[in-house]
View 1: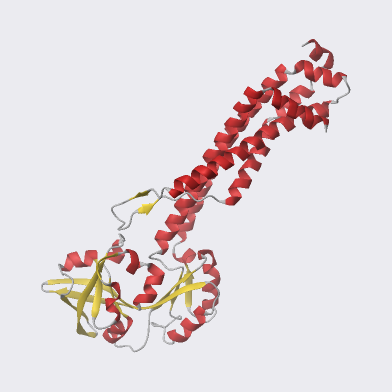
View 2 (view 1 turned 180 degrees about the vertical axis):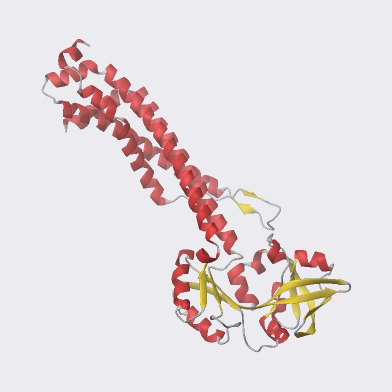
Length: 386
């Protein structure tokens, strides 16, 4: 194809301008790929941190009922749903905890420790003292750090749990946890059996926490359970602000990235405009030899497209390599509210490695339209005179 041949020849004979144009697009795409990898890593970290304490799906009792009565049958049904990774039944009640002269109201929740840990990771990441699994047997309690401070109690000491409708129960403090979330750090956990004994309502629970392999399948799982009459809610319904915040952040970041690439593409437009001025005689010669205006226009559009695609491909490869390297460093930082250091991730989306070079190609071709149109409008006689 004549137009492509001429475009490639122009590129090869103008090495300095070619390097500058390709370098501008490469740098822009590399920056975007690294930014995208950082954003993907941030979103992944936010999701992981959030769902270390929050369920993907929460199941509450049927309308008009205070408890879930046949919860073991319900749990069997939940496990049969594809994608379910963890199921944690819980019995929550309000109690007063007292130690010596100190008294605090608390949300005391009975759980199966091994199942709760699969949903919240509290036993693996948030224990500051004691044994998370110690509550599995006997009358033992895990207390949040704020509750420990308010009661001024230590591990191994007894606190008394009471409520207006129940008999007092002595509980040995078996562990202390800190999540950085005030509501959690003022709560208490006992075994499910201990909570049922304290409440005196029999073998019942108040809710079920569910974790699934793909958080975006939460609506499907919730709908399956709701069909049985239970009040099942996905994290989207429970925490709509999370997805809204991420959507706003995604839009603003994408806008910045497109603007960066657009600026680089206009760098190509400038190079192409200079090329038209430098190649005026060549254009006149081509037109004198029979090339029509459409063919001349195609030459310059092809050239801008080649520069954009080459820059996009190189920038994509470089950005991916830098992102992989930065991710391998496992850079971390600590914040006062979190007991665990947060690792900065750089996660490259394979789709980005294809999409942004193609976007660079498209924007570069668009940016080359005006110089191409300008070249095609040259009068052959005038062009030959230079």
